[in-house]
Amino acid sequence: MADLAQIPLKRIDGAPDSLAQHQGKVLLVVNVASKCGLTPQYEGLEKLYQTYKDRGLEILGFPANDFGAQEPGTADEILEFCKLNYGVSFPLYEKAPVSGTDKQPLYAALVQAVPTKQGDVAGMKERFKGYGMTPNDDPEVLWNFEKFLIGKDGSVAGRFAPAMTPEDPDLVAAIEAELAK
Image (cartoon, rainbow, N blue to C red):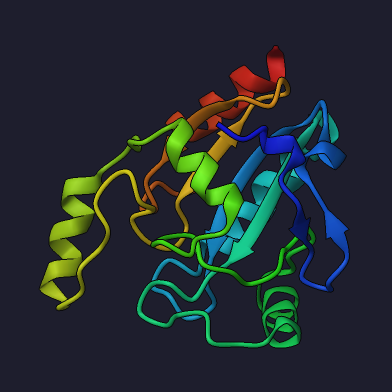
């Protein structure tokens, strides 16, 4: 498996980055979208970031248009939407696929590291089917706002279903456990 820290990334403004630049931090990697029923999770993600950033948590948002074309905007439109509507101050990255054969290398490595997710996957799939949508099966990313937790040592410590909100006690406990290491 690829060393996550060495995978090249680009910030939403085009600046180069990698997880190595966040070494020693606990990372919550989230694929995000502006026009999704789960978009209000931005508010909880920002609150989580403000609560734990001084203890070493970084939230990294990866816009993707993979699911229902729910992230159609340009980089500037996405950035403006996130700042104006949710006050997002955590880093956002270049829009790129997080599923399928052309998924970005970081997401290819993440789903390989942890092929199944924690949380209510079956219930979410049933709700989507009721709307005529077909979410992905494991190991692929299910939908927008799936979360990967990366420990200070750079290993993937957890994977959480999109419906698991940033306030969910299981997610918060996992973050706190990683911060305590």
